[in-house]
Image (tube, rainbow, N blue to C red):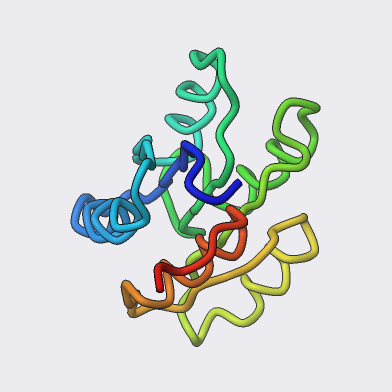
Length: 132
């Protein structure tokens, strides 16, 4: 899949954090980033798409539908059952991280977010090699 177009859904209620994640992901090249402000917004955006997303990055603590409930909903849906999901956690949120992984999250990134870590996890889950 190296160099292939990929769509990543970023689910984060903080506009600043969404922007940081989007800018980091755009450095991968040939990436479309969809942004959602909470789990309900994410589900609406996924339902409106005809093409699948290749990666979901979600915060846990959000209004309306939190990240844990979003993971459960994505894993229960045939269309998104196998999509890699990265959870954003605080280092004090070990219980949240464990619950997220038990619900089917693929990986996690701890806050404060750092672009190199976001890129490393996204590259690995999208099957992309870092540029030489």
